[in-house]
Amino acid sequence: MRSYGFTDTLAAKHYATALRADIRDGLTRTPKSTAPTWFYDARGSELFEQITQLDEYPVWRAELGLFLLHADDIAVRTRARSLVELGSGSSNKTQLILEALGPAGLHYVPIDVSADALHQAGAQLAKDHPGIVIHAVRADFTAPLVLPELPDDGPRLIAFIGSTLSNFRRPARGPFLRGLRDMMRPEDFLLIGADLVKPVPEMLAAYDDGKGVTAAFDKNLLHVLNRELDADFDPDSFDHVAVWNSAEQHIEMRLRSRVEQRVKIRDLDLVVHFERGEEWVTESSAKFSTDALQAELSAAGLRTDQLWADEDAGFALMLTIR
Ligand code: AVJ
Image (cartoon, rainbow, N blue to C red):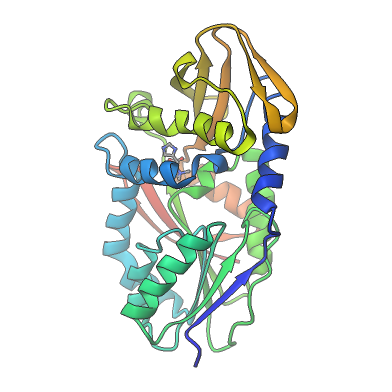
């Protein structure tokens, strides 16, 4: 049985086209606001890995702790024979579930925009668990998904972990969750990792750490735009700030212009004006209460079957069904 298949659903120029459209739209609106997708070039991905290990940033450790505690519970409850992971990245935490489910003959569908991440994680998994049948899919999971042909030999588990849901603003979360529900059969499950609301100083510190790693992560966006769009952003003329937007219940990372300036973006034939002190939202990260998130899931036609929370770290895994 072939143990590794790869499907690329993205057009060759997907990244360039999507980047140009979002930056043109995002830097010509008020307030300026662009998608966090563009953070993750090689340097940005490396900085994000460093963020996950920061004392001030509990998300990654808290979720790993819950996986170590409950991977067996998830395997016993779901009896899944296929695991579909949205935004699979390095697949390191899902490996715990794959092992608990019994990897022999299991079908794993890692979905990510990065072909490199898919190939690296796939090669590692195929080496560690030769019995797993991997269908890697390069796709943007925020767009409607078409899953590869999977056997009908048992329930499917869709995993959307790492609190990636946080990057969806409230209006977009409903349709996204409804779309996942519509992909599910009655016997299938959806596992969501969600970062919970904490005291504001703790949440701000997680996005503006003392070592300045998050500031470098945020400012790396300027290097990405300079390289990808032939722009003239000067990283020293922007400050990184983290703000708690209580109305939206989300943290905002922003780049604040130190001076009034005009920045050329040659590939867009655009000059972008910044007032002194003007703030550009580069990411919003929603923080949930389990009650509020369960209400959002319910509105999308999903019921919570199991909930495992790490109250101290403020993180929850929610196993949901149709
Ligand atoms: C990967 C979107 C879950 O929102 O906490 C971490 C990204 N940004 N530090 C998050 C992030 C700044 C992270 N997510």
